[in-house]
Length: 119
View (cartoon, helix red, strand yellow):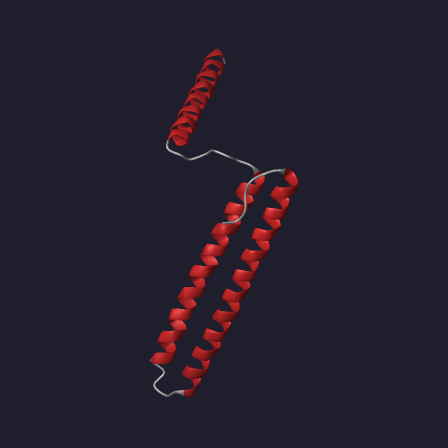
C-alpha cells in the first residue's frame, strides 16, 4: 500500500511537471492555452462546419462527374441536377449556420467579457 501511495504521488508530480513544461513551450511558441468553454464549443463548431463544407465539395464533384458522364440518359442527368441543387442548398445552410454561430458567440463573449468568435 505504501508503495502504491508513493508511486501515485510521483506520477502526479511527473504529470504536473510535464503539463507545466508543455504549457511553457506552447506559450513560447505563440500558442495560448485557453480552455474557456466558449472557445472549446467554438472550435468544435468550426470543425463540424469545416467537415460539412468538405462534404459539400465531395457531393458537388460527384454530381458534376455524374452529369458529365450521363451520356444523354435522362435518369442520370436528373439525379445529377438534383444532387447539385441539394449541395447548393446545403452550402447555403452551412454558411447561415456559420453566421448564426459567429453572431451568438460574439454576443455571448460580449456579455461575459471574453474575446472569441467562430473564425
